[in-house]
Structure formats: C-alpha cells, structure tokens
Image (tube, rainbow, N blue to C red; front, side, top):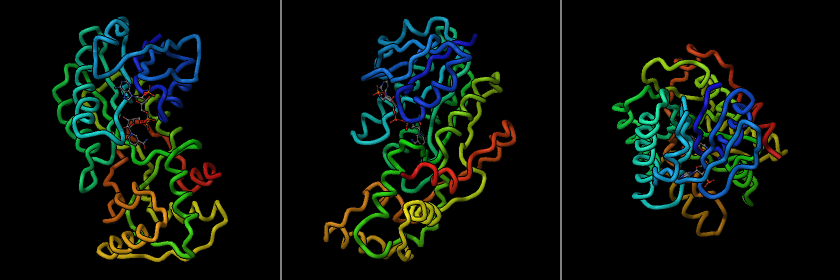
Length: 294
Ligand SMILES: NC(=O)c1ccc[n+]([C@@H]2O[C@H](COP(=O)([O-])OP(=O)(O)OC[C@H]3O[C@@H](n4cnc5c(N)ncnc54)[C@H](OP(=O)(O)O)[C@@H]3O)[C@@H](O)[C@H]2O)c1
C-alpha cells in the first residue's frame, strides 16, 4: 500500500481528500494547530510545521508520495507567504526526496494568472518557478475558486447577494471567468494523480472545462436563495467609486470580492491537459453551487 505524507489534511480540500484516500492508502497527515476530525485505521495525524522541517522530518520515513496542500492563503505579511508557501514547500520536497519519496503533488492556485497578483499569488508563482529544479517529479495543481457545502466562499457570495440594496452591482458586468470547482472534484483529481506513477514534471489547471462567470455565480446563488434583484453591470472604471460609496454608507461588501473582481479579473485557465490525461468529469458549477447554498 502506498504511503502518503499529506499536509493541510485538516483544511477545506484536505479534509475531503483524506476521506477519499484513506481506504486504499496509508496516510501520515501533518497538522499545525489541531488534527482533523477524520479518523481511520490508515491515518496517523502528526503535528508539525512546514516552516520547521525538523518538526516533521522523522515522519517522512517510508513515505512514497507527498501531497502538499498546507499553505498560507490569507492574512499575514509578505514574509509569512514567502516562509510558508515558498520556503516551506521547497524544504518539504527536498527532505521528502532525501527520505525516499519519489513523487510530489503540490497545490498551487489559478490565481497566479490574475492581474495584479496578490501576495498569496506572488508566493505561489515563485513556488512554482522554484519547483522546476526539484530533485523528484513534481505535479502542480492549480485549482480555481474551490467551493463546497462548508465553503467560506459560498457563505460570502450569499452574504453579498443578501445585502440591503434593492439591486446588485456587478463589477465589469460580471464577465470575470471564475470557473469555480467543487471540492469533491479537486479531491477526485488529486486521487487520480496519486494513483498514477509520475510522468515528469506537470502542471494542471483543475477546474470545469467551460467558462462560468461571476454573473452566472451570482444568478445561481440568487436563484437558490429565491432572491430577485436586478443585476446592474458596472464598467471597470466605474466600480471603484460605487464601491467606495457603498462602503461609506456602511453597506457590507465582502472585501475579498470587491477587490478581486473590480477589474473583471477572472482566471486564465486551460483544463484540457488534465481532462485529456485523466478524463474526470467535473460537476457543472450551476448544479454544484445550488446544492451547496443553504
Ligand atoms: N480553497 C481554495 O479556493 C483554493 C483555490 C486554489 C488553490 N488552493 C490551494 O489548495 C491548498 C489547500 O487549500 P484549502 O482551502 O484547503 O486551505 P485551508 O482550508 O485554509 O487549510 C490550510 C491548511 O494548511 C495548514 N497549514 C497552514 N500553515 C501551516 C504550517 N506552517 N505548517 C503545517 N500546516 C499548515 C493548516 O493546518 P491547521 O488547520 O492545523 O492550521 C490547514 O490544514 C492550498 O495550498 C491553497 O493554496 C485553494
């Protein structure tokens, strides 16, 4: 049975993935603050910090593959993104190779295709560049926005559409291609990668095959919540002053989305290579989001 060293197993994606992998793999699951809720005879939760390799070094013995999901996604300063996402990843891959692992599956993000790059995206981009020189085969996955029944993004979208205004302003007319991916599909994709032997270094965009825009997300959430509000498309240059006005009136807009989509800034992705290699059908976002909205 393959032994996997999994980081981020208590996180949004990891907590789904660990359930899928556990029946057929031995898993050493690294946690930083608290172990995940999932228990299984094949799963051993081990405490450690990816920024401090000596805290997990001994657990890499006998590991065949690593699946590295742990990351700093939000908050913090530039140095902490660098420390966790760049340095922490490189040290983990190096040490795992020294201990005998022969394949690393590493989570990056489709946000590295957005402009301007957030601190998070900058660190993921740098991580990808440095991983090209890794000692063992590395498969990089770039999910778009990941949602699921417990997703913070679904809650944020709900909060956004349920705001007090009788209409809804869509930055850049809602044209940003967000192409959200269900957490179960990300888990299936990683599982498929784990099952196959590595074929050199590869990078895969993990998302549905057809565009799904911000406007479509908002329409879907509204429909699922039974909310009817006119959607007012706002041009790129006009959204910032409207946003400032809304904020001045203390109308809550999740800041993540306001900055994120202000320039109509979606992802630029190509899911075809993953589809061609693995042929996994991803759930249509309209159906997936409707199931997750409460
Ligand atoms: N969610 C998305 O929309 C999305 C989209 C694209 C890419 N991704 C990528 O997918 C991966 C997983 O994302 P996620 O949403 O599942 O993340 P998440 O829910 O925020 O979980 C982050 C995980 O990282 C662990 N962690 C953070 N710092 C650590 C450290 N220094 N040492 C050890 N563990 C540490 C946390 O452990 P504790 O719980 O113990 O603190 C937690 O398990 C990330 O690499 C992310 O960049 C996510």
